[in-house]
Length: 102
Image (cartoon, rainbow, N blue to C red; front, top):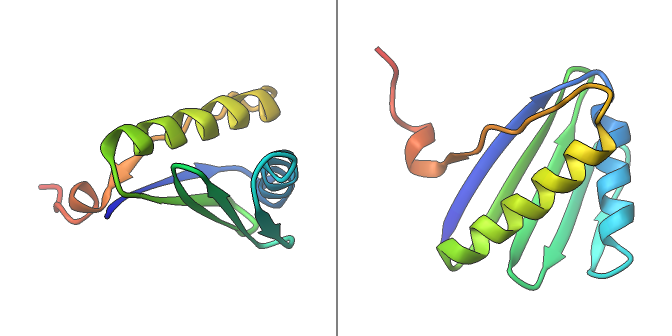
């Protein structure tokens, strides 16, 4: 299983979480409330969490090409929905997230 995580610093995290989930729910299964969301894409699972200062997105997929597709779909939609803030996601894989910086 391949996992990737990204965090966007924004005071509108809950708004974007709900907007993303509602949008994706038109085509794929999605469940959400103001603080948590889950979207089941044909190419992987995406979970989102919102708090007062950030939106955290965690994705899981069986194949690298599916992970890249999922990240691309999420990047594209968040950039469109959050265009005023110019949010950009910086994805980290589970392995990259465990490396310590010196």
